[in-house]
Image (cartoon, rainbow over all chains, first blue to last red; front, side):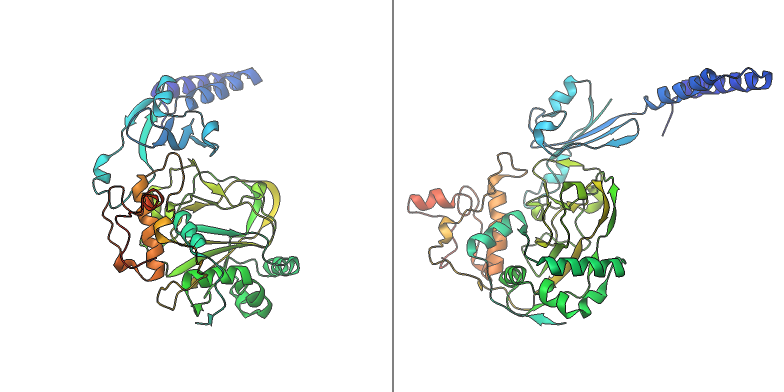
Length: 125
Length: 279
């Protein structure tokens, strides 16, 4: 996963501090915790991705399927529609998600061949 | 290839349901003593393809030729259908976590043809905690390479095939399916095999004298279908007529013609699009 340069610099500085404290015999548990915290912070900056398969290209159309990657991990979701975190693309947008890919209509120009699972939007945070 | 014949058990209505949804669940059709014997055999043959099952007469008689399952297979594949050539066991150590994983098996085609059937058999109780296979009803009509499904996860209207021991479910080969997360501990066996058509398709199943093609319901009833309603009906009708060996009589004229509006049209005594000379 890609970690922003600023976070890498911060973690490196913390490690150097710990190395110096280790040499001086003053390294503490809290010093090491600061590095763990810095790693957690960096992880939170991984791009989150939300795939939504919708019944139509309209942002208000009902969700048919959904996949979520957060903090670099796939997050299990229920298959019951009412338990999904969003019922439509517009609901996800209102919660801060940004669309980065719209359904590719070039794939469905031939209606006699049905492709895939509805109209897929890809969003990020 | 060994073949088998028996009496068909499915009616036109059940055949149409299979064409619409792509699978048929038969719960608790294998006796407990056979399930236990299968479990012991799986422990002794833990490999992914325990083909020695095919040498066991009791397995062939009670599982592969199981009366309710064989009757359904006979209905869909016709007489003297080909018996499985290999046996697979999706034997997993639970618990395990599954995310994504949707696929259709290699070689899947989106044709109306039903030249073979994919069959799953649970020799043990397989509740949700033991990670039953999940299927997406109607997906055998959707075109998508498995490589482009790998990001999919939660799909509305997907069905987990949780079932008691001795259950068999029969699917169109190309149905989308996946393994699911198992939270319980233990080993779960899932036996899988394929039957083959040898006879030309024909309406060789249980004929309901009251069945009328113009009244047949090809809609899935989903309130928000993934596809246009008329297309859903057309695909199911196309598969059904292929099974009858009468697909050449059918030309889809679109609009609200048969099979999309079969019931409503018949009520008015006029059924545009209905294949000629078919009942």
